Length: 396
Image (cartoon, rainbow, N blue to C red; front, side, top):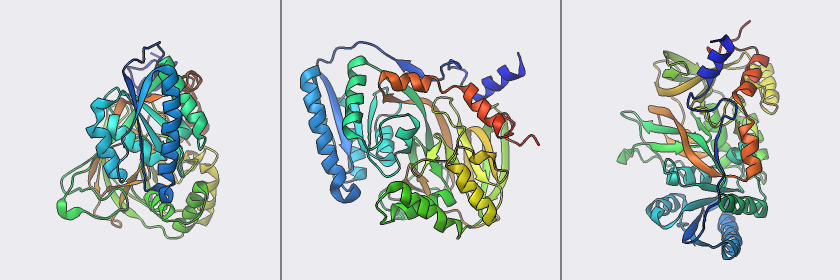
C-alpha cells in the first residue's frame, strides 16, 4: 500500500467510500400516513423564533396537501421543553424539521440522532454554521422549506457524524439556555453535538456573543473575538486521546483555547477547524500552543476567515476518535463548555466520534456537492499548510 493510501485510510472512516465520502440515498417513496414534525425555540430572538416556526409550518402544510404528508408542531415552552417534546413524541412523526440556529440543529440531533429518522434544517440563527458547512440555505426560509420538501419527495439525505460528550466522574451539566449552574443536582452530561465542543477561549467568545445586543450574528462574534483576545487565560487541560491511527496520546495542554470539532465553522463563518469533514468518523482537536502576542492574534483572525487558521504555528491539531478531557494540575480552571452555541457543563468529560449518527434531509444538488468534499481535498489543504496528516505536526 502506498503512503498516500495509508494516509487516506487513517484520515477517513474505513467503512466509507473515499471517493465520495458521504453515505447518500435517493429513492422514490410513498408519503401516505407520513408525518413531518416541526420544532423551534419559542423564546429565541424575543419571540421571533416562534413566528418563523409558524410560517414554516404553514409552508409545509401547503406542501403536505400537495404531496400527501401531514405536519405537526412539537415545539414546547422553552429550548429544553422543545427537546423533551420532540423526544417524547418521536413515535408520531417520520421526519423532524428544526427551525433556528446551530442550537436548534443540536436539539434536532439530540432528538433523532442514531434513530435513522431524517432531520430537516431551516437555518435562521445568528451563526448557522452547521447549515453553512452543508451548503444549505441560510436565512432563506422559503428556499430551505422547498429544499426539505424536495428531499422528502425524492427521498434524498446524507448521513453525517456527530460528537457525543458525556460526563466523567465529577462532571455535571448546566442549564442549556442561560448557563445556570445546576451542580447541586449533579445532572450528568450526555449530549450529541453537530458542530463544535468549545472548552476555553472559544466558549468565552460564544458566551459573550450570546449576550451581545448587536443586531447581526456574525458581527456579534467578531466583536466578541476582539474583546476576548484581550482577556486570554491559560487554561489547564489534561487530555487522553485515541488518535486516528488507533494510538493513544496522553498529555497536559496549557492553552487559552481547546476545541473538539466535527464541523469547520463557528461564529457565522470563522473556520476554526478547516480540515474537518462531516463523514470521516473522526473529530478534530484544535488548540493554541501558547498565549499569542498581538501580531499572532491579528494573523489568526485573518487566517480564520479564509480557511487557513491551522497554517499558523501557534495552533496545534490532531485527529481523534475519542478524547477524555480533565483538569490539569497547572493552568487556570477551564471555563464552561459550550456545544453548538448552547451551554453544556463543566469538565471532566469524554468526547466520542459517532460515525454517521445523524441523517440530514438535503436536496440532490447538495448531496452531490457534499459527495465531492473528499479526503483528497483535505489532504491537499493539510499539505498546503505544511503539516503531516498523520501526526498533525509541521513538517518544517
